[in-house]
Length: 118
Image (tube, rainbow, N blue to C red; front, side):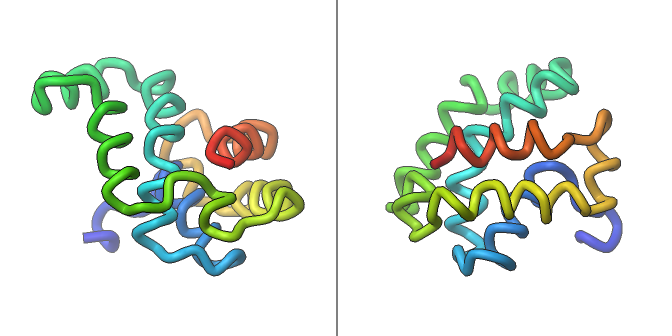
């Protein structure tokens, strides 16, 4: 599936945590989803609105539920240190896949996403 769709903003920030901080793939995705949904909604409110319609509630409600089910709700709970947030933002900002979710997030926005999840 990834071969046909590629990676967008959410997957880039989550995969960067797995790659550089050793956060489990599922945990990284669950922790980041409530935060990246806001960034995605700003980029494509119509699509997030349709997702909410399909879910019968705001996507953020489902994302928060999934995060709770995972048992690790914050990056700090996953062992990520404050110093790692900037490094992960820098590493994620180098990923060309960010262009698949226009406009591509810059290092400042990526840092804010990681900090919000910390």
